[in-house]
Length: 297
Ligand code: NDP
Image (cartoon, rainbow, N blue to C red; front, top):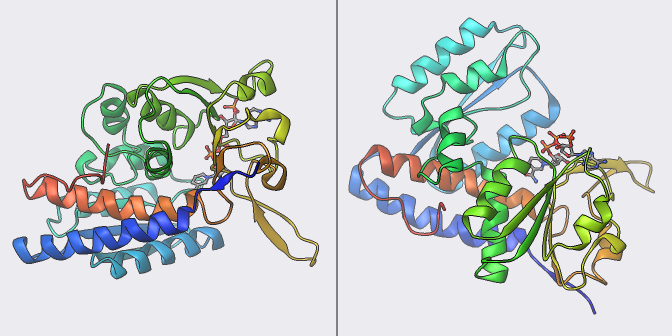
């Protein structure tokens, strides 16, 4: 048996094409473009790449992209003042502050200063509360992308035994909430979980978000399970350079799983597509029109 490969790159490309068409309709009917502000503080190389890619993807979808690159020494007050201006600016529908932030800045305070309706990352405490209480809000992009792939591959998730490995605020916890909303039976596992392999082996849906390269071997996977590998880990390559791997031992897992996402080319492209989806959703809501079907939960 060999697992079906869930091609996140292809699913994300389809989603981006759909979003671009819906953005074009929005621009035509409202006379404005959805606007996304991306704020980067400092020169972290990985963050610079992420911000550049988000900007390019926005422009390709017809979304106006505004990049704010601030010096690494920027104070918390200066950053909060910028967030205040972006909150008040009607041409900005989504605000994303790239993490991590330099040590002089309290990321929690900055996130909670963002207008929840413009919080396209879905990290604001109001959006966390809305997700957990089943109200419409902004859903974090990475788990939203995972959910879309799961629905695309499995259809109805009702009653499925799901295990989420990882309990971070940006991936594990919102992922578990989304699966619960789709009526899966959800277990959240973490570094203090006992009998981790046994618990993972129960899963019909296994979402790996631990950030540990190749931690999940074939013997942790229930035969036929659908495996979503969120992990992005840089490891040394035979060439002497580095390469990206997930949390799942991919080559071994394909022999056991029913379906699996590759790394790269799985969750990563869906995360960016969902950022565009959230920006369009925010713009629609700001203009009092319903968000297009299928872009959010
Ligand atoms: P965090 O480090 O914030 O969280 C990791 C979670 O995994 C924690 O809950 C931790 O448990 C748990 N964990 C770590 N080691 C073990 C272990 N040995 N056994 C059991 N549980 C363990 O990471 P993130 O949630 O931010 O990210 C997870 C991974 O996903 C990373 O590789 C990251 O790069 C990737 N990522 C990918 C994205 C994408 O677009 N594809 C987007 C965001 C993240 P505990 O809470 O007990 O410490």
